[in-house]
Image: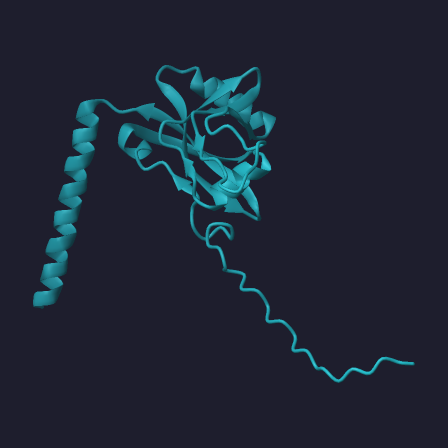
Length: 176
């Protein structure tokens, strides 16, 4: 006997593509704000990061910190050290170590360029931000040169002068 359908079901509404701004790439997962204060950022590179499943979930929930991290080229491979990715709260005994070293993925030619540039005096690799792109975790790595104390003061002076000039222009527009 054929089954009669008396119950009509409504189609489920489509999921919002913007349900998680970090995972969809609209918001950065982690930003190293102190990097531009302590370093002159000369060149920026995009690279992938080799992560475990619980690390990706932690990055997605905003538990990544790039504050004291740095990159090194070792034996032709790029590595990220001191990047803290907090443990996943729903993880089990196989949860990741928060401060483990992580491999970065870049083309060999780009790594060769970085080897030449990082061997110059005073240049280092600093991660600037971590974000999602097409569902994958990406890291923006900057070739940086350290600032002296007087450089930091000069940058701060220039920033306040620019801010005061913008405010003066804004006040001039209000009055007119």
